[in-house]
Image 1: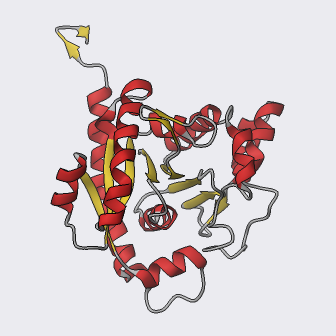
Image 2 (image 1 turned 45 degrees about the horizontal axis):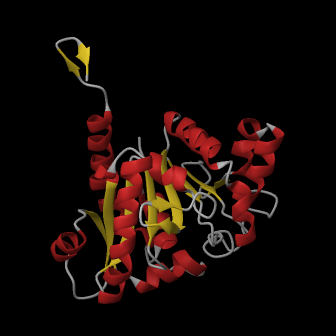
Amino acid sequence: MAMVALASAKSSGVTCSALALALAAPKRTLLAECDPAGGSIRAGYLQGYGTTAQIGLHRLATADRAGTLPEVFEQHLVAFDAAGERLLLPGLTDPAQAASLAGTWDALHRLLRVMEEDGYDIVVDAGRVCVESSTRLSESASPAVLLRRADVVLLVVRGTAASLTATAPVVKAVREDLERHGTGSGSLGLLLIEEGPHPAAEIAAHLRVPVVATLAHDPGTAEVLTNGGKVRGRFAMAPLMRAARTAHEPITLAATRRRIQLAPRRVEGTHV
């Protein structure tokens, strides 16, 4: 099992990518919609079905202050399927609610790890990265704790000049923040949406970050994931969903390698 956090420099399809990964994963998966700019899956892909304004991320800060968060947490999860193999923690209904979560991200991380221990892969939609300085992520306006403690942090990028230009300074800020406040920059990678002329190898060299996985540029499927609506043909066989299914293996491998790197090693009976 693993915790993977997705973020971007600007609107680069983070939520759509996170949703595709969660729906296509071969394992039980929980998608936590933690974008401080507000959630969109509730009104978009789900079109309001199976959820109300009484549940979701925006209610967790109140529960945390009341000391009831561990007891009520699972009440705020929505099932994408009847079997409960794919779960969603719906996001904020108003960006103004983000500030109230500043003291709750740590508790939320612990609960997500409990869900992981229960057999779920965790996908965190962290939205747009908010940077306070070149070496520190915003504590109040972004789920910095979740990025710093994730097994893998994937910055979603497209193969266009505009996306690469916007992503370069964010790579620097996130890398240095992970070194100073997280588990190190070894958890940082890229999730490439294959739009634009620049290939994965060129992007990795330019940004000095490995491309961990790629997703197909598939506007039709992205439209369904973003706004809901009628699915044409076999949704699971759409290019984006096939790519998301394929991406699960390299992302899981990256998370496993990172855990091994961070685990205490025994050398002649001594932890080092």
